[in-house]
Amino acid sequence: MTGTVWKYITEKLESEGACHFSLLDPDPLSTTVENVVEIARLTEKAGSDAIMIGGSTIFGVIDDACERISDEVDIPTILFPGNITGVSQHADAMFFMTLLNSTNPYYIIGAQALAAPKIKLMGLEAIPMAYLIVAPGKTAAWVGDAKPFPRDKPKLPTMYAIAAELLGMKLVYLEAGSGAEGGGVPLEMIGSVSKYIDIPVITGGGFNDEKSVVAAIEAGASIVVQGTYLEKHVQVDEGAELTKIIKGLKKAGAKRV
Ligand code: 1GP
Image (cartoon, rainbow, N blue to C red; front, side, top):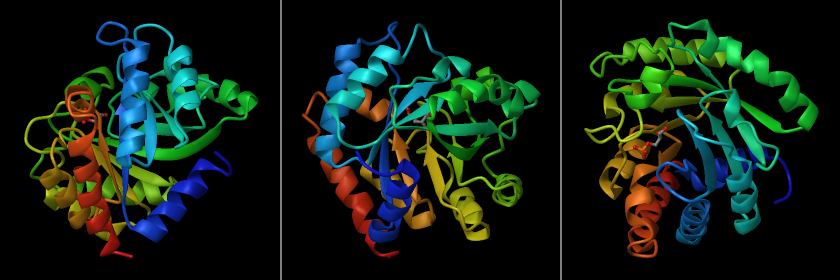
């Protein structure tokens, strides 16, 4: 693909109002590289706008998966690292994340500092992103020593999101945790955060159907991320239902353009 990934994302959001990102976790304990590449191919075919590669726990090296996914698809591949092990030169860009509601400075700035020289030397495009973990938070909360925001307290992540914007972050990610029950981050929380910041809100964790994905966009999110859904369903129906989910998301997005 040509041009920077950030330019691609902003232009897509400007013209289509909302984006769908597919999260793939190339964890050899639960999948194979071939499987992940196949899912990437199907999600692109279904209309997903980008592939995020990573996870909170990485067993092994992600280079091979990154290289093969990037070769397979034309949409951007963006690293979504849970630690310094999540860096690869084979992706188009990286979400340079800081887990702002971690209680451990390692996840706020320590890992970033350790990885920064390599990222800079590689010339990898880094997109600064605030990562905010909402209850239940699942593995991401446990690994990241987070103090997850209670689901009924939208004001708390809103304060953090405004701080993130003032610090110069380009995106705010509201994360309920991969496999979260309850249909993702509460809509009231997405609404509150989106209302008070001018940078795009990206959300993920438990968005497993069209209804919840569309509701997140209608509540104010710009990008919805799906991971678990893809692992479970995309190969079963060759992406037929995902195509419908993404159509629904784009329809909701179009109302905002
Ligand atoms: C996890 O938000 C992502 O970081 C995706 O979550 O696996 O529940 O779709 P799911």
